[in-house]
Image 1: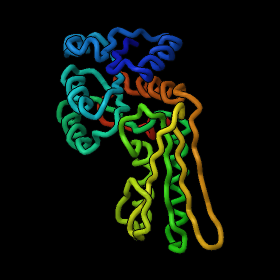
Image 2: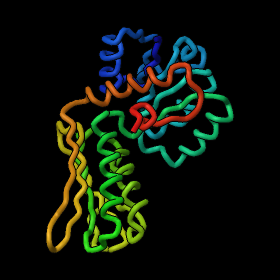
Image 3: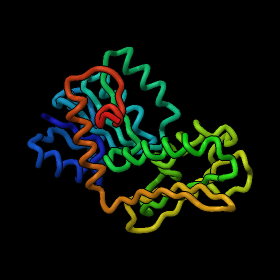
Image 4: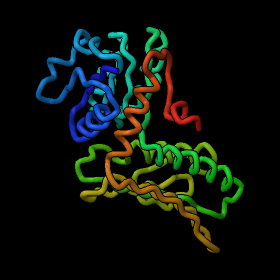
Length: 238
């Protein structure tokens, strides 16, 4: 499979290594140093694109891949206010898109655990829930896309919580997400339910970027030759 890497930072390099190990070919690498090469013509040399950039460029990158007729896997965060728009654009143009806030197989299992725990805790209003996420200091967005996904799963099951806030809070209707930036942490997410009687806590800690990169390549293999909009739940069958 021929892959275009749109975003060739640390994650792009990790994806490249795993993709080559799995027998794929990298035909395009876009970084800040060669933005002019990020063209429809060049993207069309690939069977699938993997996009890991920033919130300021992700939407246009995805649109460009769809216009090129190339399935695109995206892990960029901080741009999701436009997700429904790009989803509609993809479907209207018979494209293929797979977005995930986190491609790690472990994290996606953690998503399933978080959702189930939130469902189990829904009747028990005596437990307050809060979150913490830790990432390296180069991470641009706070809270992380993974933390937002986890928070939205909780909000969907807990009507007394109306929104998440990226701060400590004592307001009952707010779900607190505390963001810490510490090197060299690749990513830790903690969900804690607290009551006067006991605490319940689930934690996921990444040790390196390999899990994210492996999942992104797995997603690209899944999306190859498909049409439509997908998620990692489709890839993993969970």
